[in-house]
Image (cartoon, rainbow, N blue to C red; front, side, top):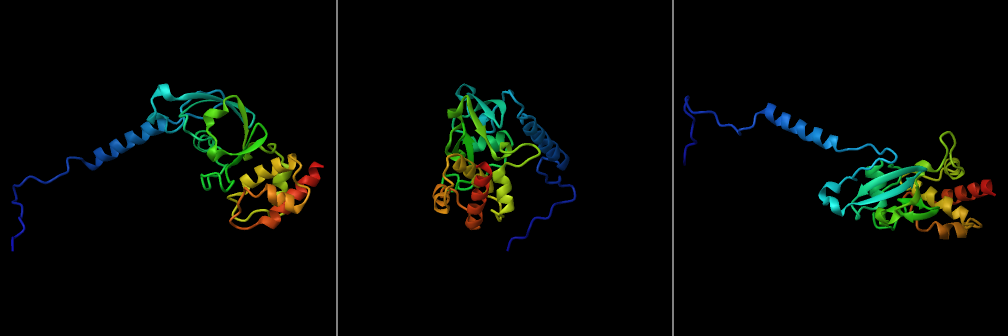
Length: 213
């Protein structure tokens, strides 16, 4: 059995070459650099979306959107979806990422007054279009009638799917598809509620429809 070598008193200490102070200094520098690349989403401000650094500058595209009434000008990777730009670039996190496959409806927003699933919508296709998210639905001091109806009817439990449910319900009512319970269920079928609050959601849509009429 080999005996483990015991260092002699005059052996030099074994070190990694990086001191604790040096490691912390380098970490702080990296964090500071990453933070400096975040640009506030001010109207008419041109900035690259997250991940754009991975794409050569000549491959980025400029997209001009009106989001909740505010003009936005963005330089984005053409592969980015509207959902990712809304959440990661503009900080509008009310729009939820559920399945990311267009099957659950949690990411529903309005584009030019029509409902779309933003996880399947490439933002590069929306130049000069108007986008409305759940944050832009009501007034500053007053909820939209559909939002109020969901509160009054307890049309949610965990609340994760609720923004998409409300955005779909607003378009459904505007299309005149709220005439019966069966019609509401049919035209809301693209929005899944894993908590199964469907009866209350139907009641909320009917209540908001009465206010509209």
